[in-house]
Length: 224
Image 1 (cartoon, rainbow, N blue to C red):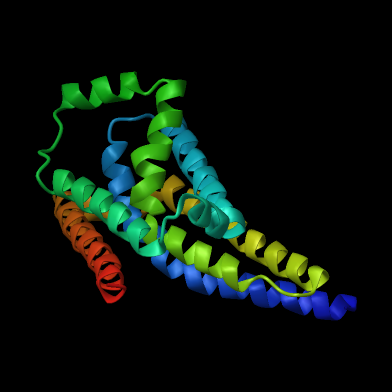
Image 2: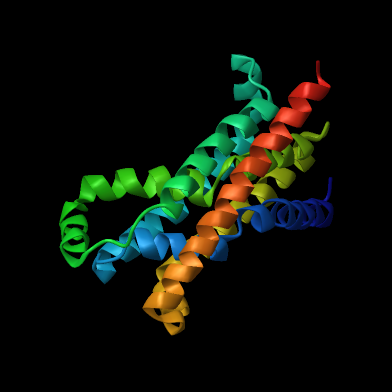
């Protein structure tokens, strides 16, 4: 294939991956949760968390896109099972958030002191990156995109996957920027408004988890 054709395949794959994954991942919807979980943490630690979450989101999406189908086939796991398991995690996390009381000042200070470099790495991945930001829906979408990017011609297949990986880079960057400036974006809501917004976000997240479980269960039941 000539270079213009490869460039066109790259562009189409980039737009296809963005359109398929970014609306499901939806970084602004997770911003209130990030602000609440990092309440009382200094700005540099919050920036480090946001950067690590963006990196983890990139690695998870890229890995799912490149080898997701092969890993699931190796272990004999189907996408509906992934949806059910991930949906249960999302629903459980949202349920805890929905019934969590506001932390006191001493609790916030203790939380800030407990976030060492090692803890930042751990908490940046679970639960912040997975499943709150990049959940089973996003991973399933990335696996589906990766399966669609294969082509009988090797150069075209390489161009397709290059476009898909470029899309994951842009998605990870959008997550970082959204979380990095989430406090400024949500500051006009005030303390009470943020609490109300968090409760609504937790309820929506709970509904989303139940919906993910139901979608996976429906596919499993149709296979019986």
